[in-house]
Amino acid sequence: MKRVRARLVLAAALATGTAFAQERAIPLDQLKPGSAFLGADLRSLQADEFANPGTLWVERGERLWREPAGKKKQSCAGCHKDAQTSMRGVAARYPRVDPASGKLLNLEGRINACRVDRQGVEPLRYESEELLGITAYVARQSRGVPIAASIAGFARSHFDAGEAAFRLRRGQMNLSCAHCHEANWGKRLLSETISQGHPNAYPAYRMEWQTMGSLARRLRACLSGIRAEMLPYGSPEYLDLELYLAWRAQGLPIETPGVRR
Amino acid sequence: MSARIQISPQAKRGEIIEVRVLIQHPMETGYRHDDVGHLIKRNVINLLSCRYNGVEVFRADLSSGIAANPYIQFYTVAETSGELEFTWIDDEGQQGSERQPIVVSG
Image (cartoon, rainbow over the protein chains, first blue to last red):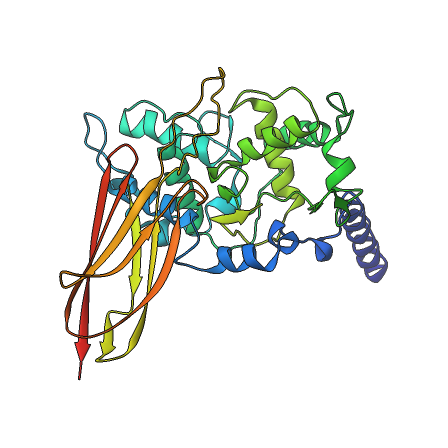
């Protein structure tokens, strides 16, 4: 009897495990980061600790980390001390639901929430050099750490909304994210190979931009490419989508600061 | 304008050393338009110079064909201990400079 029950439990566990695995259009062992779709020149530029242009922003972020701000003269380092230890692995867990406010926050949102609540200063403008710098510096501390964003609990509704956003046909070309990055990755789109659309290198330095940019900017660029309406920076739909993308990329190591086409 | 410089801090006399420079700069070509259609004025780093203990060992004239955040790599010969001084200037007259010490043995 005991053995039967044990078997049942095992069968149930296997069933849920399979159901979960079936939800993934790209199996975990077939995930490829964006860098796998780059040419050798950009791959080596990303790997070069000195010449990677994203390091300019990481260094700026490091200076800002130590800089006291506001009337309280509070710096990031004042609470979090050495980012190399305190921020290790943090970026791999974002976006996540902030237990205090119940809101879904990405790394940019978390940094700005900290600025307002703890430092008593204005939030940094999305896509400003300062916010890109601190975000890149914090994410850099997680380089090599596999993405492990949680979709349990309050995050679940955001995850579902994110998946819906991923599969929604949009714009004049009537395409969803899934049409390119799920059904046709690896194929050519004019001169470029379509990637799987993973977020693990952001903020990243994009050759097309000639500068550093956030994941939200990358999403906007995709929407512009399919001639769809671009949503404003920091909009909830992008956050939900970022969470879905993080779940999709589960296990891929953080590459920030990435170099992309 | 922030910049990163990399040279090997220690070298033997007569050794050929690699110098790497990465400068943060938009290198605005002068061909782009802003969101409301106005031409964005050209602003590129037009000159980069490197002096080794006061003697110019490298100079580059840059123009609008060079990408943003230019990365420049060159070689020089280690002669005496001292410092390498890098200076650059853009079209708007903004100057930047950076110094890097070097120890030469033998």
